[in-house]
Image 1 (cartoon, rainbow over the protein chains, first blue to last red):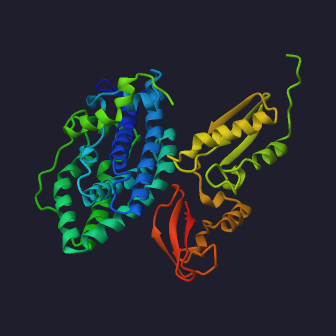
Image 2 (spheres, rainbow over the protein chains, first blue to last red):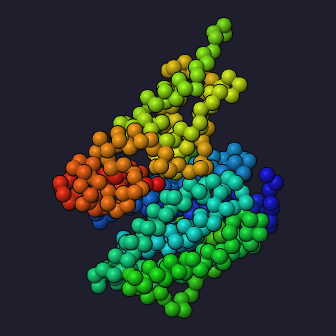
Image 3 (tube, rainbow over the protein chains, first blue to last red):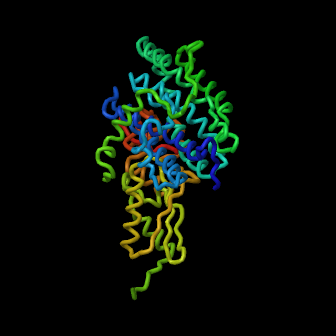
Length: 257
Length: 158
Protein backbone atom coordinates (compact mmCIF):
# COMPACT_ATOMS: atom_id res chain seq x y z
CA UNK A 1 0.00 0.00 0.00
CA UNK A 2 1.41 3.38 -0.97
CA UNK A 3 1.98 5.65 1.99
CA UNK A 4 0.15 8.97 1.98
CA UNK A 5 2.44 11.54 3.52
CA UNK A 6 1.06 14.83 4.80
CA UNK A 7 3.21 17.40 6.59
CA UNK A 8 5.94 14.80 6.94
CA UNK A 9 3.63 12.28 8.65
CA UNK A 10 2.54 8.92 7.26
CA UNK A 11 -1.24 9.28 7.51
CA UNK A 12 -1.88 5.64 8.20
CA UNK A 13 0.72 5.47 10.95
CA UNK A 14 -0.56 8.65 12.55
CA UNK A 15 -4.13 7.39 12.48
CA UNK A 16 -3.17 4.03 14.00
CA UNK A 17 -1.25 5.75 16.80
CA UNK A 18 -4.27 7.93 17.55
CA UNK A 19 -6.58 4.94 17.85
CA UNK A 20 -4.05 2.80 19.72
CA UNK A 21 -2.97 5.48 22.17
CA UNK A 22 -6.54 6.24 23.21
CA UNK A 23 -7.06 2.55 23.99
CA UNK A 24 -3.72 2.20 25.74
CA UNK A 25 -3.95 5.25 27.98
CA UNK A 26 -7.57 4.62 28.96
CA UNK A 27 -6.89 0.92 29.43
CA UNK A 28 -4.03 1.79 31.76
CA UNK A 29 -6.12 4.31 33.68
CA UNK A 30 -8.82 1.70 34.25
CA UNK A 31 -6.27 -0.86 35.40
CA UNK A 32 -5.38 1.52 38.24
CA UNK A 33 -8.75 0.63 39.78
CA UNK A 34 -8.00 -3.07 39.95
CA UNK A 35 -8.43 -4.13 43.58
CA UNK A 36 -9.74 -0.69 44.64
CA UNK A 37 -13.28 -0.33 43.29
CA UNK A 38 -16.26 0.10 45.63
CA UNK A 39 -17.71 -3.38 44.96
CA UNK A 40 -16.34 -6.67 43.67
CA UNK A 41 -18.53 -6.82 40.54
CA UNK A 42 -17.28 -3.41 39.50
CA UNK A 43 -13.71 -4.45 40.08
CA UNK A 44 -14.15 -7.37 37.74
CA UNK A 45 -16.04 -5.32 35.19
CA UNK A 46 -13.61 -2.44 35.03
CA UNK A 47 -10.62 -4.77 34.83
CA UNK A 48 -12.34 -6.54 31.92
CA UNK A 49 -12.99 -3.29 30.06
CA UNK A 50 -9.35 -2.40 30.65
CA UNK A 51 -8.33 -5.77 29.26
CA UNK A 52 -10.43 -5.25 26.11
CA UNK A 53 -8.84 -1.85 25.55
CA UNK A 54 -5.30 -3.12 26.06
CA UNK A 55 -6.10 -5.98 23.68
CA UNK A 56 -7.33 -3.51 21.08
CA UNK A 57 -4.12 -1.53 21.65
CA UNK A 58 -2.19 -4.63 20.58
CA UNK A 59 -4.10 -4.64 17.30
CA UNK A 60 -3.77 -0.91 16.55
CA UNK A 61 -0.17 -0.46 17.66
CA UNK A 62 0.81 -3.83 16.20
CA UNK A 63 -0.35 -2.62 12.80
CA UNK A 64 1.28 0.79 13.44
CA UNK A 65 4.59 -1.02 13.94
CA UNK A 66 4.13 -2.87 10.64
CA UNK A 67 3.30 0.33 8.78
CA UNK A 68 6.22 2.19 10.34
CA UNK A 69 8.64 -0.50 9.06
CA UNK A 70 11.22 0.12 11.77
CA UNK A 71 10.84 -3.23 13.45
CA UNK A 72 8.84 -1.86 16.39
CA UNK A 73 6.35 -4.14 18.11
CA UNK A 74 3.21 -2.89 19.86
CA UNK A 75 5.14 -3.21 23.13
CA UNK A 76 8.00 -1.08 21.79
CA UNK A 77 5.56 1.65 20.81
CA UNK A 78 3.75 1.49 24.14
CA UNK A 79 6.79 1.42 26.39
CA UNK A 80 9.46 3.37 24.60
CA UNK A 81 7.82 6.58 23.40
CA UNK A 82 7.84 9.75 25.47
CA UNK A 83 4.78 11.85 26.17
CA UNK A 84 5.34 13.98 23.06
CA UNK A 85 5.03 10.87 20.91
CA UNK A 86 1.58 9.95 22.25
CA UNK A 87 -1.51 10.90 20.24
CA UNK A 88 -4.36 10.15 22.66
CA UNK A 89 -7.13 12.56 23.60
CA UNK A 90 -6.66 14.66 26.73
CA UNK A 91 -9.94 13.16 28.00
CA UNK A 92 -8.58 9.64 28.46
CA UNK A 93 -5.49 10.71 30.38
CA UNK A 94 -7.49 12.62 33.01
CA UNK A 95 -7.18 11.14 36.50
CA UNK A 96 -9.67 8.55 37.68
CA UNK A 97 -10.94 10.82 40.49
CA UNK A 98 -14.09 9.45 42.11
CA UNK A 99 -15.63 6.28 40.74
CA UNK A 100 -18.34 8.46 39.23
CA UNK A 101 -15.73 10.55 37.45
CA UNK A 102 -14.16 7.39 36.01
CA UNK A 103 -17.55 6.23 34.74
CA UNK A 104 -18.40 9.62 33.24
CA UNK A 105 -15.06 9.73 31.42
CA UNK A 106 -15.73 6.19 30.20
CA UNK A 107 -19.19 7.06 28.95
CA UNK A 108 -18.08 10.17 27.05
CA UNK A 109 -15.30 8.18 25.41
CA UNK A 110 -17.29 4.97 24.81
CA UNK A 111 -19.93 6.93 22.89
CA UNK A 112 -17.27 8.43 20.60
CA UNK A 113 -15.42 5.12 20.32
CA UNK A 114 -18.55 3.18 19.41
CA UNK A 115 -19.69 5.49 16.60
CA UNK A 116 -16.12 5.83 15.32
CA UNK A 117 -15.64 2.06 15.10
CA UNK A 118 -19.06 1.52 13.50
CA UNK A 119 -17.98 3.72 10.62
CA UNK A 120 -14.40 2.44 10.57
CA UNK A 121 -15.80 -0.95 9.63
CA UNK A 122 -16.15 0.67 6.18
CA UNK A 123 -12.66 2.18 6.10
CA UNK A 124 -10.93 2.14 2.72
CA UNK A 125 -8.10 0.31 4.50
CA UNK A 126 -8.97 -3.37 4.90
CA UNK A 127 -6.72 -3.97 7.90
CA UNK A 128 -8.24 -1.01 9.76
CA UNK A 129 -11.76 -2.20 8.89
CA UNK A 130 -10.95 -5.65 10.28
CA UNK A 131 -9.71 -4.30 13.60
CA UNK A 132 -12.80 -2.08 13.86
CA UNK A 133 -15.09 -5.04 13.16
CA UNK A 134 -13.46 -6.94 16.01
CA UNK A 135 -13.29 -4.04 18.47
CA UNK A 136 -16.80 -2.71 17.98
CA UNK A 137 -18.30 -5.89 19.41
CA UNK A 138 -16.45 -5.27 22.66
CA UNK A 139 -17.09 -1.54 22.70
CA UNK A 140 -20.83 -2.08 22.22
CA UNK A 141 -20.74 -3.77 25.59
CA UNK A 142 -18.63 -1.00 27.13
CA UNK A 143 -21.10 1.64 26.00
CA UNK A 144 -24.06 -0.36 27.25
CA UNK A 145 -22.43 -0.64 30.65
CA UNK A 146 -21.26 2.97 31.04
CA UNK A 147 -24.66 4.23 29.79
CA UNK A 148 -26.45 2.16 32.40
CA UNK A 149 -24.19 3.27 35.24
CA UNK A 150 -24.23 6.97 34.35
CA UNK A 151 -28.04 6.86 34.42
CA UNK A 152 -28.16 4.90 37.66
CA UNK A 153 -25.71 7.17 39.48
CA UNK A 154 -27.00 10.43 37.98
CA UNK A 155 -30.60 9.55 38.69
CA UNK A 156 -29.60 8.06 42.03
CA UNK A 157 -29.21 9.66 45.46
CA UNK A 158 -28.57 13.41 45.83
CA UNK A 159 -24.98 12.53 46.72
CA UNK A 160 -24.34 10.31 43.70
CA UNK A 161 -26.01 12.87 41.45
CA UNK A 162 -23.73 15.61 42.79
CA UNK A 163 -20.68 13.47 42.06
CA UNK A 164 -21.84 12.82 38.49
CA UNK A 165 -22.72 16.45 37.80
CA UNK A 166 -19.32 17.57 39.10
CA UNK A 167 -17.60 14.93 36.94
CA UNK A 168 -19.53 16.04 33.86
CA UNK A 169 -18.56 19.68 34.37
CA UNK A 170 -14.95 18.77 34.90
CA UNK A 171 -14.69 16.48 31.85
CA UNK A 172 -16.97 18.24 29.37
CA UNK A 173 -14.31 20.72 28.15
CA UNK A 174 -12.24 17.75 26.95
CA UNK A 175 -14.98 16.41 24.68
CA UNK A 176 -14.45 19.11 22.03
CA UNK A 177 -11.14 17.58 21.03
CA UNK A 178 -12.82 14.37 19.87
CA UNK A 179 -14.59 16.19 17.03
CA UNK A 180 -12.12 18.89 16.11
CA UNK A 181 -10.31 17.58 13.02
CA UNK A 182 -6.78 18.78 12.33
CA UNK A 183 -5.15 18.80 8.89
CA UNK A 184 -4.06 15.16 9.26
CA UNK A 185 -7.60 14.10 10.15
CA UNK A 186 -8.86 16.01 7.15
CA UNK A 187 -6.44 14.19 4.87
CA UNK A 188 -7.33 10.81 6.43
CA UNK A 189 -11.02 11.59 5.95
CA UNK A 190 -10.43 12.61 2.33
CA UNK A 191 -8.58 9.34 1.65
CA UNK A 192 -11.41 7.26 3.14
CA UNK A 193 -9.16 5.94 5.88
CA UNK A 194 -11.42 7.31 8.59
CA UNK A 195 -14.97 8.68 8.69
CA UNK A 196 -15.77 12.37 8.80
CA UNK A 197 -15.89 13.46 12.44
CA UNK A 198 -18.76 15.76 11.52
CA UNK A 199 -20.79 12.62 10.70
CA UNK A 200 -20.06 11.07 14.09
CA UNK A 201 -20.95 14.20 16.02
CA UNK A 202 -24.76 14.03 15.63
CA UNK A 203 -24.82 10.38 16.75
CA UNK A 204 -22.67 11.21 19.76
CA UNK A 205 -24.81 14.24 20.61
CA UNK A 206 -28.01 12.20 20.43
CA UNK A 207 -26.67 9.39 22.60
CA UNK A 208 -25.05 11.68 25.15
CA UNK A 209 -28.00 14.04 25.45
CA UNK A 210 -30.46 11.18 25.81
CA UNK A 211 -28.42 9.50 28.52
CA UNK A 212 -27.60 12.67 30.46
CA UNK A 213 -31.27 13.63 30.39
CA UNK A 214 -32.27 10.24 31.75
CA UNK A 215 -29.54 10.67 34.36
CA UNK A 216 -31.07 14.08 35.33
CA UNK A 217 -27.73 15.76 34.64
CA UNK A 218 -27.23 19.20 33.10
CA UNK A 219 -24.87 19.64 30.17
CA UNK A 220 -22.65 22.63 30.99
CA UNK A 221 -23.86 25.65 29.03
CA UNK A 222 -21.40 27.72 27.06
CA UNK A 223 -18.50 25.72 28.43
CA UNK A 224 -15.08 26.45 27.06
CA UNK A 225 -13.85 23.49 25.00
CA UNK A 226 -10.29 22.39 24.37
CA UNK A 227 -9.48 22.62 20.70
CA UNK A 228 -7.50 19.91 19.00
CA UNK A 229 -4.19 21.76 19.23
CA UNK A 230 -1.16 19.64 18.51
CA UNK A 231 -1.98 16.02 19.27
CA UNK A 232 1.51 15.69 20.78
CA UNK A 233 0.70 18.21 23.54
CA UNK A 234 -0.69 16.69 26.72
CA UNK A 235 -1.78 17.58 30.22
CA UNK A 236 0.73 16.93 32.99
CA UNK A 237 -1.08 13.70 33.84
CA UNK A 238 0.27 11.72 30.89
CA UNK A 239 3.84 11.98 32.16
CA UNK A 240 2.83 10.37 35.45
CA UNK A 241 0.99 7.59 33.63
CA UNK A 242 4.05 6.84 31.50
CA UNK A 243 6.38 6.94 34.52
CA UNK A 244 4.25 4.18 36.01
CA UNK A 245 3.49 2.20 32.84
CA UNK A 246 6.96 2.35 31.29
CA UNK A 247 9.02 1.93 34.46
CA UNK A 248 10.06 -1.65 33.85
CA UNK A 249 11.18 -1.24 30.25
CA UNK A 250 12.96 2.02 31.05
CA UNK A 251 14.81 0.55 34.03
CA UNK A 252 15.46 -2.87 32.55
CA UNK A 253 15.53 -2.37 28.78
CA UNK A 254 14.44 -5.44 26.85
CA UNK A 255 13.14 -7.30 29.91
CA UNK A 256 10.80 -10.14 28.95
CA UNK A 257 8.63 -12.63 30.82
CA UNK B 1 16.95 -36.04 7.24
CA UNK B 2 15.91 -39.38 5.86
CA UNK B 3 12.59 -39.22 7.74
CA UNK B 4 9.34 -39.26 5.88
CA UNK B 5 7.27 -36.24 6.84
CA UNK B 6 3.90 -37.44 8.07
CA UNK B 7 1.01 -35.97 6.19
CA UNK B 8 -2.18 -36.85 8.05
CA UNK B 9 -5.55 -36.02 6.56
CA UNK B 10 -7.32 -32.77 7.35
CA UNK B 11 -10.14 -34.73 9.03
CA UNK B 12 -7.66 -36.41 11.32
CA UNK B 13 -6.15 -33.05 12.28
CA UNK B 14 -9.60 -31.65 13.10
CA UNK B 15 -10.11 -34.67 15.35
CA UNK B 16 -6.85 -33.95 17.16
CA UNK B 17 -7.74 -30.28 17.57
CA UNK B 18 -11.12 -31.35 18.92
CA UNK B 19 -9.25 -32.95 21.80
CA UNK B 20 -7.53 -29.70 22.83
CA UNK B 21 -9.46 -28.14 25.74
CA UNK B 22 -10.08 -24.43 26.09
CA UNK B 23 -7.62 -23.30 28.79
CA UNK B 24 -10.23 -21.38 30.78
CA UNK B 25 -13.31 -23.56 30.24
CA UNK B 26 -11.74 -26.99 29.82
CA UNK B 27 -15.03 -28.84 29.30
CA UNK B 28 -15.21 -27.50 25.77
CA UNK B 29 -12.59 -27.93 23.08
CA UNK B 30 -11.11 -25.25 20.87
CA UNK B 31 -13.11 -26.73 17.99
CA UNK B 32 -16.35 -26.51 20.03
CA UNK B 33 -15.51 -22.87 20.74
CA UNK B 34 -15.42 -22.16 17.00
CA UNK B 35 -12.12 -20.30 16.99
CA UNK B 36 -10.32 -22.61 14.58
CA UNK B 37 -11.38 -21.24 11.22
CA UNK B 38 -9.37 -23.31 8.79
CA UNK B 39 -6.88 -26.14 8.55
CA UNK B 40 -5.02 -26.85 5.33
CA UNK B 41 -1.81 -28.18 3.87
CA UNK B 42 0.17 -25.63 1.88
CA UNK B 43 3.21 -27.11 0.13
CA UNK B 44 3.88 -29.58 2.91
CA UNK B 45 3.26 -27.05 5.68
CA UNK B 46 0.22 -27.28 7.89
CA UNK B 47 -1.49 -23.90 8.20
CA UNK B 48 -4.01 -23.49 11.03
CA UNK B 49 -6.07 -20.30 11.05
CA UNK B 50 -7.24 -19.15 14.47
CA UNK B 51 -9.45 -16.19 15.36
CA UNK B 52 -9.30 -14.58 18.81
CA UNK B 53 -12.39 -14.55 21.06
CA UNK B 54 -11.86 -11.15 22.71
CA UNK B 55 -9.03 -8.79 21.71
CA UNK B 56 -7.61 -8.84 25.22
CA UNK B 57 -8.36 -12.41 26.17
CA UNK B 58 -5.29 -13.53 28.14
CA UNK B 59 -5.87 -17.10 26.98
CA UNK B 60 -5.08 -16.25 23.34
CA UNK B 61 -1.35 -16.91 23.54
CA UNK B 62 -1.93 -19.99 25.66
CA UNK B 63 -4.43 -21.27 23.09
CA UNK B 64 -1.85 -20.90 20.32
CA UNK B 65 0.68 -22.70 22.47
CA UNK B 66 -1.75 -25.56 23.15
CA UNK B 67 -2.58 -25.94 19.44
CA UNK B 68 1.08 -26.03 18.52
CA UNK B 69 1.89 -28.49 21.29
CA UNK B 70 -0.95 -30.84 20.35
CA UNK B 71 0.02 -30.92 16.69
CA UNK B 72 3.73 -31.31 17.39
CA UNK B 73 2.93 -34.18 19.75
CA UNK B 74 1.15 -35.83 16.82
CA UNK B 75 4.29 -35.46 14.74
CA UNK B 76 3.54 -32.35 12.70
CA UNK B 77 6.88 -30.63 12.17
CA UNK B 78 6.14 -27.90 9.65
CA UNK B 79 3.40 -25.81 11.20
CA UNK B 80 2.16 -22.25 10.88
CA UNK B 81 -0.52 -20.55 12.99
CA UNK B 82 -2.29 -17.68 11.29
CA UNK B 83 -4.39 -15.09 13.11
CA UNK B 84 -7.55 -14.00 11.35
CA UNK B 85 -9.59 -11.05 12.69
CA UNK B 86 -12.36 -10.95 10.11
CA UNK B 87 -15.04 -12.20 10.19
CA UNK B 88 -14.95 -11.49 13.90
CA UNK B 89 -15.59 -14.42 16.21
CA UNK B 90 -19.15 -14.82 17.41
CA UNK B 91 -20.60 -17.15 20.02
CA UNK B 92 -22.93 -18.38 17.26
CA UNK B 93 -19.95 -20.46 16.11
CA UNK B 94 -19.95 -22.50 19.33
CA UNK B 95 -21.10 -25.99 18.38
CA UNK B 96 -24.40 -27.41 19.65
CA UNK B 97 -22.36 -29.97 21.52
CA UNK B 98 -20.30 -27.15 23.04
CA UNK B 99 -23.48 -25.39 24.18
CA UNK B 100 -24.63 -28.58 25.94
CA UNK B 101 -21.24 -29.09 27.56
CA UNK B 102 -21.28 -25.53 28.90
CA UNK B 103 -24.71 -26.04 30.44
CA UNK B 104 -23.70 -29.34 32.05
CA UNK B 105 -20.63 -27.59 33.47
CA UNK B 106 -22.86 -24.95 35.11
CA UNK B 107 -22.42 -22.11 32.63
CA UNK B 108 -25.55 -20.84 30.85
CA UNK B 109 -24.72 -21.07 27.13
CA UNK B 110 -24.95 -18.04 24.82
CA UNK B 111 -28.31 -18.71 23.17
CA UNK B 112 -29.64 -15.56 21.52
CA UNK B 113 -33.27 -16.66 21.76
CA UNK B 114 -33.00 -16.52 25.56
CA UNK B 115 -33.03 -12.73 25.53
CA UNK B 116 -33.40 -11.60 29.13
CA UNK B 117 -34.86 -14.94 30.17
CA UNK B 118 -31.72 -16.97 30.57
CA UNK B 119 -32.34 -20.46 31.93
CA UNK B 120 -30.55 -21.34 35.17
CA UNK B 121 -28.06 -24.12 34.31
CA UNK B 122 -28.78 -25.78 37.66
CA UNK B 123 -32.56 -25.88 37.98
CA UNK B 124 -33.68 -24.76 34.53
CA UNK B 125 -35.85 -21.90 35.83
CA UNK B 126 -36.06 -18.80 33.67
CA UNK B 127 -36.77 -16.61 36.68
CA UNK B 128 -33.23 -15.21 36.66
CA UNK B 129 -31.51 -11.83 36.66
CA UNK B 130 -28.18 -10.42 35.61
CA UNK B 131 -26.16 -9.06 38.51
CA UNK B 132 -23.04 -7.97 36.65
CA UNK B 133 -22.14 -7.54 32.99
CA UNK B 134 -18.78 -9.18 33.55
CA UNK B 135 -17.74 -12.40 35.24
CA UNK B 136 -14.54 -14.31 35.87
CA UNK B 137 -13.48 -14.05 32.22
CA UNK B 138 -14.24 -11.43 29.54
CA UNK B 139 -16.66 -13.80 27.83
CA UNK B 140 -18.97 -14.32 30.82
CA UNK B 141 -21.47 -12.33 32.91
CA UNK B 142 -22.71 -12.99 36.44
CA UNK B 143 -26.34 -14.02 36.88
CA UNK B 144 -28.54 -15.18 39.73
CA UNK B 145 -31.46 -17.59 39.79
CA UNK B 146 -34.48 -16.38 41.76
CA UNK B 147 -35.92 -19.89 41.93
CA UNK B 148 -33.02 -21.92 43.34
CA UNK B 149 -31.21 -18.80 44.61
CA UNK B 150 -27.90 -19.95 43.18
CA UNK B 151 -25.56 -17.58 41.36
CA UNK B 152 -24.31 -18.73 37.97
CA UNK B 153 -22.22 -17.55 35.05
CA UNK B 154 -23.54 -16.96 31.61
CA UNK B 155 -21.45 -17.09 28.48
CA UNK B 156 -22.40 -13.78 26.84
CA UNK B 157 -23.80 -13.64 23.31
CA UNK B 158 -21.03 -11.97 21.34
